[in-house]
Image 1 (tube, rainbow, N blue to C red):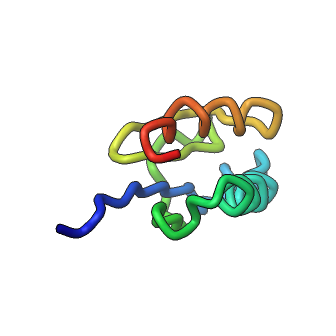
Image 2 (image 1 turned 90 degrees about the vertical axis):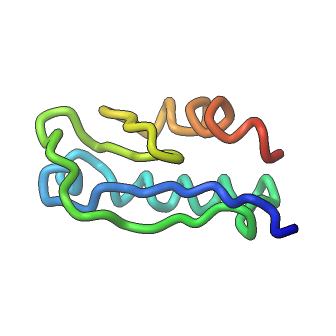
Length: 85
């Protein structure tokens, strides 16, 4: 039976970009690699999610998480990805 995979989408809209999603991409990539789960998580960009004034935004397995900053990104990933570590 195939192992279930988690999915993270990051908004690549211009508003989220101006609010720091470029740094979040690096943080998430490093987090996945550091925790040896990069083969279990599909991480990809997404078109605008429609919450421009609340960005940067992520969708983790269908759950929208708005207004993520670099300081809290790792804690959010720990919480949302705890079942695959």
